[in-house]
Amino acid sequence: MNKIIQSAVLLLLPAVAWAAPVMPYGTYLVKGAFKGEYNTVLRDFGTAAVRAQRADGTVIAESTVATADAEGFNFILSIPVASKATPKACEVGETLDCVFAAGDETLKVPNTLTVGPPIHVGVLTFNCTEVASYTNAADGTVVEIPTSYIAEAQAYLDETAPGEMYDPWGDYDGDGVSNHAEFLAGTIPFDESDFLHITGFAAAEEGQLALKFERVGGHVYAIASSPSLAEPEWAARRVRKSKDGAELDQVLADGEDGEPGETVVYITPVAESGFFAVEAK
Image (cartoon, rainbow, N blue to C red; front, side, top):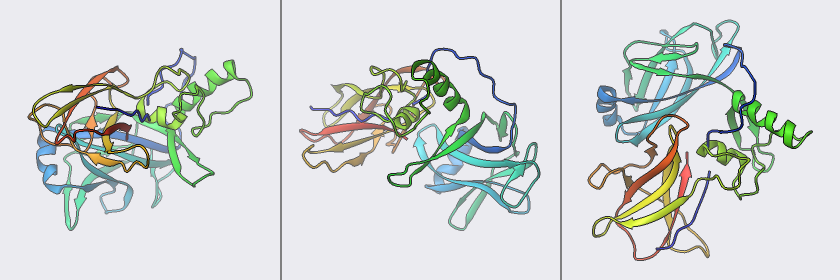
């Protein structure tokens, strides 16, 4: 069985003295997953949208969610925070409702979402992270990256490559993986030996393959395959976290946030030959 590596992040750099403001105005990312009783109800929605909105229905932020893991729904909300509430932004400490919507159906999650560090939604607690936007001049792609991450990377660059500014589209360690892809995967963009990659394969059961790859806790990964590398046509592959588990489109890595380790997923059916890729989402 052949394999191909497709890498894509949390930065693990030498400690740099830097302290972020407690809650400056700007755009913040809220990343979380609904588990337990919430997941049981939300799973009936299939693909849905999660919204942060006021009681009057004004939507401040919205994002599509899907069943990324058998244990819960993963989502990321990008919430703008201003000095005072506006139709498109909220102010620090403002209470917002968390609502899931699918078609004409909506489900208001119990309790509230309050914009401030940390953020509480239902029985879950999320960290509130300030982000900066970058636009790729080549194709217009826009990405958002935590300012704390950028500050650490820039501090490292100031010591090792004075005058160079952080560029998510560059490849500082020359490992063939862009800095933004390393951010997504949780790997170190300044270490050529650290990148997301498949570490091995093992036979599980007839018609099933166990695929191993390095992962970082708190990150979400997906698997794709192609019958050839000449003109690869990558197709998403559903996987299981256990031999008899539910089929998933994506996998939420085990372990604490930022904790490196190895994940095993099971793929069925398996062709006699082919190439696989692992991608951070």
